[in-house]
Amino acid sequence: MPVTVRLPGALREATGGETKLTTSGGTLRDVIAEIDRRHPGFAARVLDEAGALRSYVNVYIGEDDARTRGGSGAAVPDGSEVMVIPAMAGGGG
Amino acid sequence: MIERTRIVLPRKLQDEIVAHARESAPRECCGLLFGDGEVVDRLVRGRNVHPTPETRYEIDPAQLRKALLSGDDSDRYLVGIYHSHPATKPEPSFTDVTSARWPAQVYVLTSLQSDPPKVFAYRITNGEAKKIPIVES
Amino acid sequence: MPRLTADLVRERVRGTILERVGDTPLIPLHRVGAGSRGDLWAKIESANPGGSVKDRPGLWMVLDAEVEGRLVRRRVVLDATSGNTGVALAMVCAVRGYALELCMPDKVSLERKRIARAFGAQVVLTDPLEGTDGAIREAQRRAAATPDRYVYVDQYSNPANPLAHELGTGAEIWKQTGGRVTHFVAGVGTSGTIVGVSRALRPKGVRIVAVQPDGAMHGIEGWKHMPTALRPAIWDERVADLHRVMGTEEALAMTKRLAREEGIFTGPSGGAAVAAALAVAREEAGRIVVLIADGGERYLSTPLWE
Image (tube, rainbow over all chains, first blue to last red; front, side):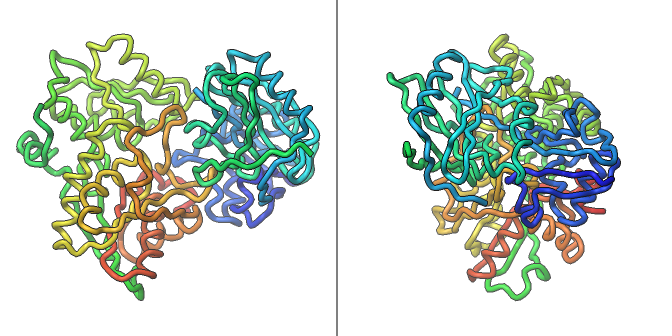
């Protein structure tokens, strides 16, 4: 069963308007690389040059925060739902 | 991308934002505003998980995930995001502008600096904040 | 108080590797710029000994502290940076004989930590979850707790940063083009480059073009990599005549073209700046100079070069 990747509106222009994609499983890096092959430039938006998740990008694999499962090296089993959620943050101080 | 040029935020919900801000002081409060298009009909209080909540906020991403899962098309039904500035003006700070990663959503702010606290709305895109009007209905 | 000048800098670095900071090559982009109204030239900052444009503010910030008498009694230089500025500071402090502490989030690559330590700097690792903010807070905390121990150079608000570009980068460009430069294009990171070069060249009629990423979820490393906790005290959007935005995909495509067509190997920010400069060159006649901040080595393992 393929992996479903849900993207926020902020990444819509990177994928030609698509916010729900399907990929095969593997590691999170594999999933992102697969999306990048279809939409070059996508990976650079969510991973830094060391291949780690950018600090303001949260990714959930099912209910688990990818950062608690190895970050960009986290396993993404077939059939899982991956959700990319940009940090919702700020502050006046 | 949905271009929101104003936000319809009923008085009752504006009052709830102010109440949340007062209850959370001296910490910043934060939360989500759901609805459709420019109209908000539901407010969800957010959990501020930033390590320095007196001057910063970050909505618990796990909470955000659950709130967004109910929608079908990513964040289409998320109309706005609110937070409070307990001690500074109700306008986006440099931090607010540089941290804003939800360009389609309206950033709603209140401040406890004035009494009664007022509520304001902004679009933050391309590193700039632009004030937009709030209407009650 | 004596102000730092290019001559003073030259004097102090004579006979060391730091002599090679600045005076970087200006190369015409014949292929990428073919068919444009304006001539496109690139200033190659990877030619600096530390590998990036940051060698300039790195050197000037430390020498400024020396000249102003702040680097006394064996004080320790301090900053929060894991990137190019960290490498630059580490190299400068090794030559000038100062101890250096660099605060950086624990998630940075092994290479970054090793390079800093290779020059003898002490690396202070901060909470990875707090990112750059956390590193800056730690640097601020140390500086406030023991102010006599540290000279916190703080690239985001240190006037020696844009000064390095005003008296270095900008002055060089004027000289290298024989006064024929008409436009200067650069990305906005700490903004030192744009602010400083603008001070040197705008009074001479040069149009300054500041380029920023097109959205909040961009992939142009180094640009607007501003800490969320601080406003760069040196930035003022009025220093630019034109503000342009650049998309990630276009930036990466140009990065590849630069390598394949011009033999210039750089990262996403270099590609982004050149793509923006090319857009200017298409519309405007004149001599358009674009700054390419660093080389592409850091990005070799990213999908860009797959």
